[in-house]
Length: 69
Image (cartoon, rainbow, N blue to C red; front, side, top):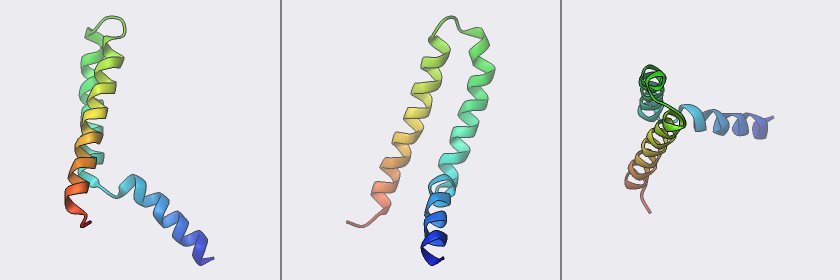
């Protein structure tokens, strides 16, 4: 039972471990939802993809600076 509880805890930590990243992604997706109807073709998808990628790369960089090696 401890193993299952530990596994579920780690899994939940993947999604709620960094609140700033989660909020930034939600804000970006909401902003993109307002912007996307005004873009043509694949520009909306590309905008959403690169925005999310930038936020996730920033999050990984910030986490790497916080963790001791």
